[in-house]
Image (cartoon, rainbow over all chains, first blue to last red; front, side, top):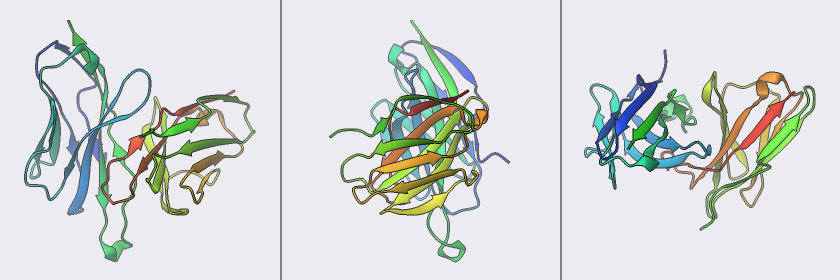
Length: 121
Length: 113
């Protein structure tokens, strides 16, 4: 089963509108971190926002906020007042933190397939 | 503060050859992770190095290896290249905490012919 699912392969949004990018995840770990990255056509991955599994408040970073619903295992990214420069691929990622009994540490980031967001003027 | 740098940016190799990619992390970052990005498989974790030790490893064959130096710079090596190794290879650095955000470099675009 996929650990990170992004159900929207592509989205078209009018400039200045808010946009929600969906992300659901699957883990049996109690401790994990959720990340969103933006990848413009240039290829570089840009970190946007982080949410820890124990964080009670939804994370916010400027125009980005994360709608974290733990029981539903969803971590949707909300971009307010979209801009033309927001056009890019957006990836949801998770890092699981294993218990010390299973060896400790954490694996690398597991990424979803991404959502291609296009902002139209 | 300078970002993560990767060299070379583009590389063309022939099947059967080997290749070494280099990554310089953000100053002060002790963890370096490598990822492979292809249209078919998406982004996949290769391995992570922390303080010159491999801390985690993804599900890739032994042809993929890496190392980290005392200054935290890292290299990734792929031996006996296959056509399927054509990909964008991304390096990311972090302070090394379990859930610290990872900052990515611009990537190395490897083409195997």
